[in-house]
Length: 258
Image (cartoon, rainbow, N blue to C red; front, side):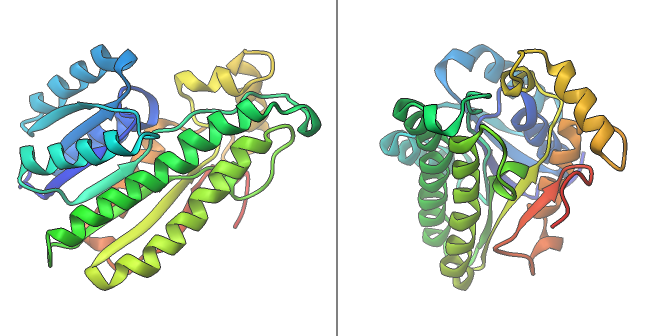
């Protein structure tokens, strides 16, 4: 078992990308606190047990990241349970409803996506930053979830694109303010990744449609995996990334070049 590197908190960790990130950070030597909403509690408990099976400490925190008091309480509980923490991975978010023309987007859909993806990330950045600053010279890493849709607009995905572009702006602003405290702030921007949410991003509801399209477009001729994203987050959480901040790094198989 590798030496303990610190404590990480991963939101939206019950499945998909978040789950792979949590397991990868545990393999790297972090004790890992994991979060998701109440409906995913069973999956979250299974993940805690899997992390503990790797010889790392873990704790489960049910919270809605779009609610400030819940985020504040979650981070306080993580810090108390693990005697502080070092890495916040603000991964939690929702997909947009696909195939809706811009002029037909209901304001309720806009609010749903922006509340979860933009406000949720903002609240995680804010309260993680406050805790890391409070800890003093310990510094830390804050990492958010953007998207290829946060690098280039996508047809009939207005709210989702706006929310993921917002994460890039939040990441840059937070990096400017937190840098003096030894805290770096970066984000990852995946392309299409093979997860349970992929079907929700398809107009037809069939993930095979997206997989075929992405495979044809990618120079690498394959769709992304959750491990591809987790490997990037692993680096951003490490000491080796200490001179990288304010960046939103693409992991999309070459479908979009920065």
